[in-house]
Amino acid sequence: MTYLVTHLPEVGELLVQHLRMTAIALGLGLMIAIPVGVLIARVRWLQGPVLAVLGVVYTIPSLSLFVLLIPLFGLGLTPAVIALVAYTQLLLVRNWLEGLLGIDPVVVEAARGMGMSYLQRFWQVELPLALPLLLAGIRLAAVSAIGIGTIAAYINAGGLGELLFEGVITANPQKILAGAVTVSLLAVGINYFLRYFERRAEIAIRGESR
Image (cartoon, rainbow, N blue to C red; front, side, top):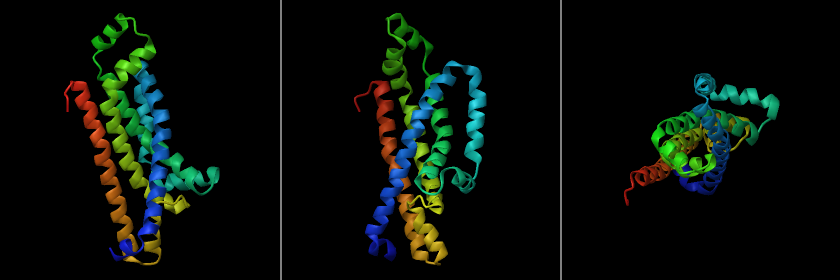
């Protein structure tokens, strides 16, 4: 732990890079996953093929996917973000879909009977009811992206993975330990942070005050 204490500014900079990479991947992933989830919730026959393709993508070894993207996008943050977006899709789409399918059709019909438009039903009824499962997917995707993002240092994308790779190359166990501890703490912290909002959404649906 000596390295972590004596090189705190350097570790902090890598931590910020890791958070930035994860946040960008999650943001772009949500922009894709939400419309895809709505589409396959409406067109049921698409659910199997879409989830199967996303499942195959998720099983591709991360280092292999990073390397495959290098000829197209070069080294750096861009291929890393593209790969992380691809890995988040299964978790985001699947949870979002389950949230939408779990809504009682009677509630949607009641909203339609009240004269709500499609967009009004989506924003005021479907999204709030499916939000807990969507947040659960975001939480799982964030933790997954943090872990997979450590491999992105191999393609010069920065992040805490640099400590791990440099530690292995230079046979410096202090760097390896510092990187592993920081990544683990980041993943645990993000998990509990997002779990808080997930619980708040669940409480709001049940109509409890806290």
